[in-house]
Amino acid sequence: MRNAAITGWGMAVPERVLSNADLARMVETSDDWITNRTGIKERRIVGPDDSTTSLSVAAARQALAKAGLTADDIDLIVVATCTPDQFLVSQACLVQAEIGGNAGAFDLGAACSGFVYALAVGSQFVQTGLHERVMVIGVDTLTRFVDYTDRSTCILFGDGAGAVVLEATDEPRGLLSTVLGADGAGYKHLYIPGWGAFVPESAELFPEYRPYLHMNGQEVFRFAVRVMGDAAAEAVEKANLTFDDVDMLIPHQANMRIIDAAARRLALPREKVWVNLDRYGNTSAASIPIAIFEAAETGKLAEEDNVVLVAFGGGLAWAAGMVRWGTAGVCRDPECRKLGLAANEPERVPSGQSPDAAVMEIPTAGNG
Ligand code: COA
Image 1 (cartoon, rainbow, N blue to C red):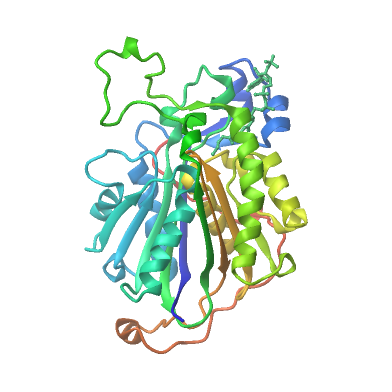
Image 2 (image 1 turned 180 degrees about the vertical axis):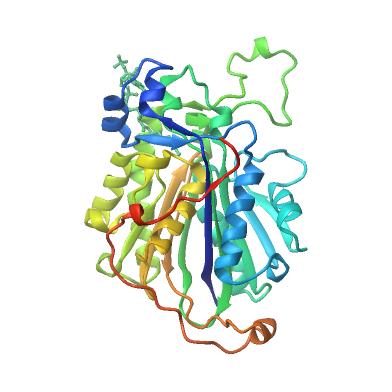
């Protein structure tokens, strides 16, 4: 069976840091409250010269370099975002304008679950044999849509981008199972009204018509606790594995209490759960590929590790998948890459599961 191994990874966050102490000077809140209720200590936010494009491009270039490829080698670019720089053209085409090549390019919208949705879509193109190499990007700049007078939402979000390159292999690598779901009836618990094709005649007729993120935090919390655990467990079962086989859980980084609930559902100890929301807050579609980058770059992912990805967010949508880490069966030679033949030895990385981002330099993009 043909699979889609992850062979390259990249990330980018803005330079500008917004700490809990900074927020406490803007709205009635405190570092204690934010830390206890969410686990977030600081987040990166875009400055005037940053954009969804600049973050995506930085992450994409890094992922290509890691895979040893150029943009010309890529057949398809899928960008998951709910905050594109513009609606026409797609964010994927804006990325391609910077990195080059003529790959097919389109966007996918599933809010914070977008990266896992896009990974599922990109993997399908490789698995069916239609494409050899696909780039999947998760990026969001939600702080452009955050109301910084609303303390219940402005504390949560940060900006960033993460990218992966998928390449064909006959070994069991990449996404081995996929769980996708949505409850569209609940969309008003987390949405950004306006800025779309529907424009009411008078904004006064629609009191909620503001281009800001609106959220019912408690409803979203309840939904998240329920679906994160269930979807993660289903992804393990669909891959014909048990919870004991899971080497790492990479959850969407929204709230530490939600992450803890998902980990409990899989009976996973904390050291097997990747957590970085203390440093980035909720970066929406970027949170999982950023975590993948950090885990890979700090040597915490080894060939054949089983990694569960699970996300939830606006939609209300959710997504999960079991990823078998590693590049076994992926041809590294340029000539055989062209033919899609033969394989070389997998590049082994050290094992060990204790996340320690201190050893890693955090890539930033743009001017904060
Ligand atoms: N600082 C201080 N107090 C705050 C506050 C803040 N930043 N935000 C809200 N409060 C207050 C509320 O006004 C409320 O006060 P009251 O009791 O006097 O009315 C009190 O804290 C409790 O509010 P509540 O909404 O019940 O808090 P909570 O424990 O549910 O935590 C969230 C709020 C937003 C942190 C939590 O609901 C959450 O994380 N939900 C999920 C949101 C999410 O992940 N969204 C993104 C999805 S991708």
